[in-house]
Amino acid sequence: MPTSRETILAALHARLSALPAMALRGEVLPERVPADGLLILRDGEPGEPEVTLSPLRYHYQHRAEIEAVVQGADRDATFDRLTASIGAAIAGDRTLGGLCDWGEAEAPRPVDLPVEGTASLKAAVIPVVLHYSTADPFG
Image 1 (tube, rainbow, N blue to C red):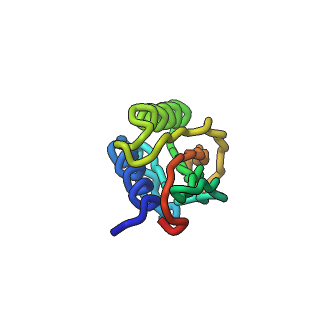
Image 2: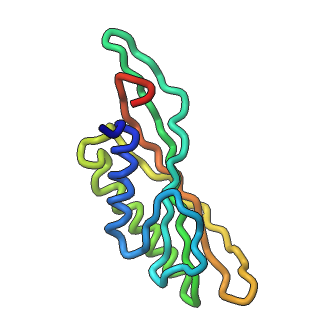
Image 3: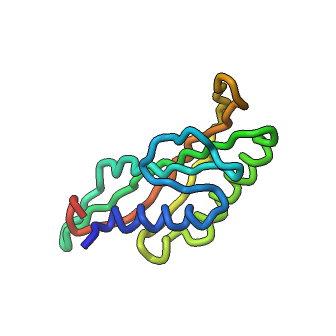
């Protein structure tokens, strides 16, 4: 049986996969970026949990990261549409179907990445904080 952490991250990846951009999880940046953009979900860090006793619960604020990448002549508009769709997807169901207590994306900080011999990339890392509780630190 998968852990709560894995179930939540898989649900977030599924939500990102419903967007027009290609959504990967834990992969390296491919050689080609699709016209609608590319999203790579990184598992991130669960951080140090707060612990409550009786019953024993570990409360996490897990910081996953979404790498959003676009390329092409209209990359500014494509990037804007892509990041807005990520925010809407997360805001549409902040509990990921009841799997976590709350999920919230932070604002992207875009950067331009020059690529030799082709159009430059526009990319950002978008942190997503996922709040959830488990009965076990490995769960």
